[in-house]
Image 1 (tube, rainbow, N blue to C red):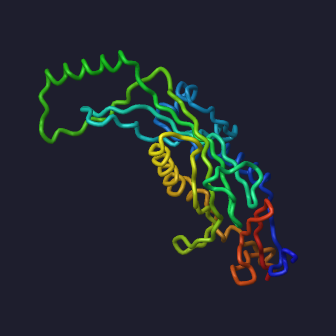
Image 2: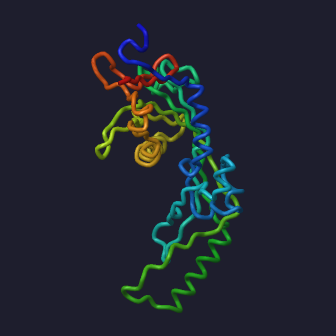
Image 3: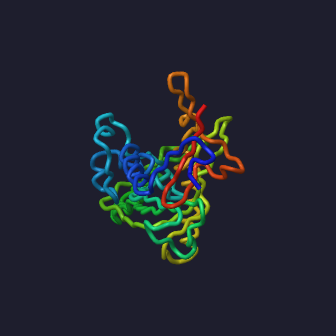
Amino acid sequence: MPLTENSDLFVSIHENGFNQIVKHFMEQRPSLFNYGTEFFTMPKGLEKLCHKIVANPVVLLRGNPLITVQPPLPIFNTDPPVGLNFVFQFSEFQMDFHPGNVFSLPPELNPLSKQKIALRLKVCGGIGCPDKQLIVDYEDKQDYKDDKNSKKENEPKPPVVTLPFDKLNCFCLEVFAVGSIDRKIISGKEYLKINLSGLEIVDLKPEGLENSLECYLKTLLTLGILPKAKIAMEVLTFNIANIISIEPTPISSSVSFNPSVENDEIALFFNLS
């Protein structure tokens, strides 16, 4: 069946081309893939990252952020409040369109279903653990303050003290996810967005730790990362010299999927009027 039998034209992109686009997107918007405390926005902090950020020179020239700043990792039950520096990075990002041949999925997600997209991510993180002597010195200093000063009721809460560190304790995990590209109405407008349907971290023990991290990553991707990567359908509508209008073909019994994911490609179908 010709691809355009139920529409006037189509545009498709192979998974190899899509992965190249993702690579450029990561270099253009590194702050969407790198999260950490304010320390890592400074030159000395960037040198200690678990994974060096590769950014387009234009990003650096414009002074755009490389890191999305997050509050320090809290140390509970400390007064005044104490926190640790940390960083969380998506260092690699690949896509594989149905039927799947760019990488092998773990058994929990295999085989790749029709109209599905597989994602492979390498996630690196690290916590800046302070030197043992620094912790002892800080504890002694706070004990002295408690002896000298009595606390007043309704006193404003002091700011979080972020403890310095010498070395970042890094780890990297390989994460696989499966999803689809769906058309969805958001605030009255139609968008193309990635819908996450499954996620698996490879060979992480114990099981409870793996489940907890998978839960966190699913939530981070669903609420924090993927919503910012959506595309408005109106962007895909064109008007040529006020004569020809090109717009995405509506979903119908004759066009079940638009976009369609198959044969290692993603295709968009359009109507002319």
